[in-house]
Amino acid sequence: MRSRCRTTRDHDEIREWVTSHDGVPARVRDIPSVGRSGMLRIDFAQRNGHVDLEHISWDEWFRSFEHAELALVYEAEKSGACTFAKVVPAPDF
Image (cartoon, rainbow, N blue to C red; front, top):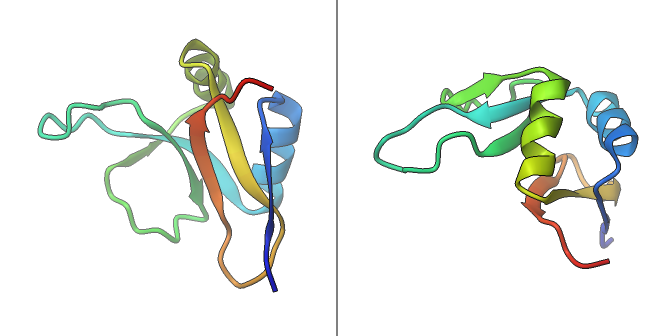
């Protein structure tokens, strides 16, 4: 069965979907060797084991989200055990 993904910039839709899937707003901690500190992520119930993630408030997450003109692609209809969401550059709708 194929999953159906959706792309959105709507803050309420994002917050509702993320919290309903046990996710929390996060960003990648400063990593000098990577050179891309502050990359936004969603941490799903800390299942990913990514020690370089720092949980942040929704207000801070959305400020960065808007400043960088991003969108969230998420799995609207789940097809398996994994939860999928990715922060991407906003498309021209």
